[in-house]
Length: 300
Ligand SMILES: C[S@@+](CC[C@H](N)C(=O)[O-])C[C@H]1O[C@@H](n2cnc3c(N)ncnc32)[C@H](O)[C@@H]1O
Image 1 (cartoon, rainbow, N blue to C red):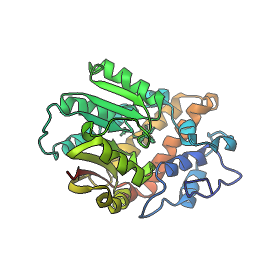
Image 2: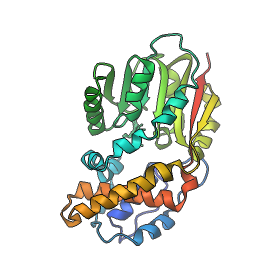
Image 3: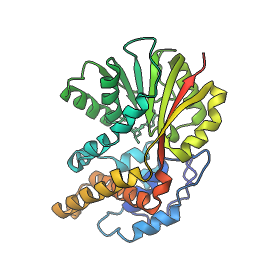
């Protein structure tokens, strides 16, 4: 097993393609409950198309940050137009925001947890009209966010900090809203909820956007940390298929047609494989990516 992730050891013949699948899997475990992605099934899907992918040095799997190292290239993401695709989800960020009750402090102070390259952070700055702090463990992503914020005139209202939610050093009760999209499922549920409670002002709200299977697992722990679900906003069925996998597939095909895949550097090849794996995983089981926003209140 790969330590802490509940994933079987990689087969000897593992390729970058397999690691793409692994990356998808590693972003999700340990799932507190619900269906697991089927490792064998996804490898089988990928086995049909590993030709262009490079062999991967399996030793790089060691270390806490392996899923970052193999899978992300923000240069590739720019070229593929990933930010624009991600923007296609913002309608739902806005709908979830609309579920929040009026704020005692205006403008509200917002923390975007695991902000990544900051698509939600930028929108939250617009919606809230005040400051957003974005935290993430990935400095490369934060650098992209700072650049994006500057480009749209929000550079003075979006602050980034490279820190883990689990050990963040931020002061108690510092925020009126905590926001997270696609992050909590990767972390220890109890430590994360405990930190969220500490960071949030009493009576204020945490908004989570996750796959519903993972949310079900998180729900079991909410009451113990003094949180209660106040509202939900489900994404339309198969949204990840129609708004991510299908358009991403078209972009990947265009990229693959216009590049010499054998000449790609290893980071780009790995990142490409990760995107391919995500497309394959979503298409293999579109219902598994059903997502929702949950608005949960911190009790006084
Ligand atoms: C799926 S991405 C989501 C990014 C962004 N929230 C969005 O919706 O576009 C998950 C992000 O969580 C970050 N992350 C992972 N572990 C973290 C931790 N312990 N503390 C803060 N961020 C973390 C990753 O670096 C990554 O940027």
